Amino acid sequence: MSFSSDVKKELCKIGSFDRETLKAELYGMLLFGKAFSADRIVFTTESSYAAKRVSFLLENLYMPIIERQSALRARSGDSRLYKIIVVDSDECREIFEDFGHSESQVTLRVNRANLPSDEVTAAFVRGVFLSCGSVSDPMKSYHAEFCVPYKNLSMDLCKILTEVAECEFTPKTVKRSGNYIVYFKGSEQICDLLTYVGAQIQAMEVMGTKAVKQVRNNVNRRINSEVANIEKVASAAAKQLEAIKYIKKTVGLEALPDDLKEIAALRLENPEMSLRALGEHLDPPISRSGANHRMQRLLEYALTEERNG
Image (spheres, rainbow, N blue to C red):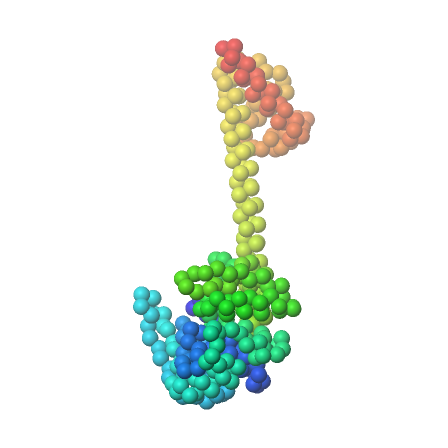
């Protein structure tokens, strides 16, 4: 089951006895479906939960004759497509006109008279999401969208979302395969959207996933930093060992000043030791910068011997 399916499952469990709220939710589902007119109402979805929800709302609000269809989608494994059809054309007209629409309309628009309050508007947007919304798995990306069949409806939806007082929605739009996509990016926008439509549990899932990803990223950065430091230390130690071995082979370590002789012998015995640890093992101990200074002198000494050789 996908994350988007989990969201719709949670939304379809929301109970309400307020007729106006239920009607607004149904309005969002039907209006943003692909067949809502005076003579034809068909709700199509891949979500069995949304199919049951629209049937429940239709039966409780209008009691029309409904035909339910279900079929496997082509080239999609076990994915099914559900259709809820209002059979009688007179009942289609009754529902269509009850939402304030008429056959004379050139294009479908959101009838704002059906959204008299903030609570009712939230129920409407919930219906829109059940009809044409989806949200990606937060472990993969932060993306939520509404796939709207008509341009004017996409513009109306954007306007409604940007007017929500308690959220600072900034939806963006793009045309894709003949549909108009209203979408959100970013975990905060998606959390706000899910909370607004009533999917609080899944909103918390997004926040929890974000926290896990942040911890994982911090750990990875720390590990990468430590690995880089280890590689840097190993590379520096290899150059130091090469220089010390060259000096030992040519003029011998006895030719070195006492302070360089001591650290050179210690490096040969401890090729993996850090400069800080080398400095602490000297007698008397010196700081990391002091140990580094001696190593630089050793490298310069070896380079001079090589040039003179």
